[in-house]
Image: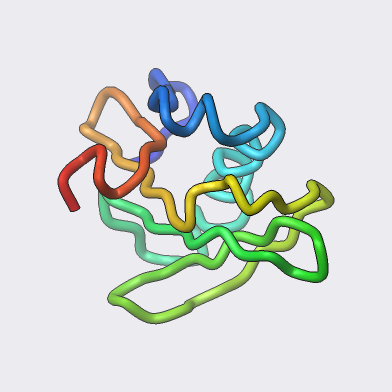
Length: 102
């Protein structure tokens, strides 16, 4: 699951509201910080939070905060409050929860 060699996409809402670097950072966190550390389902949830002016990603599992990943990217109030990453088995997409009916 979440094989970095599979096709990866981001929804229009994500692409239009987050900088490319912040989107790429989601894939980096999955590949380098979550894989092999946490048991992952095919749906991953992150809350995007303001951490002293910078963007942080709160990794949520079972409605509980499991880990926070800081980034060097500035936070913007226009960012979505949360995002999900879904792996269908051949394709992976970053989207907002409402875009995939959550």
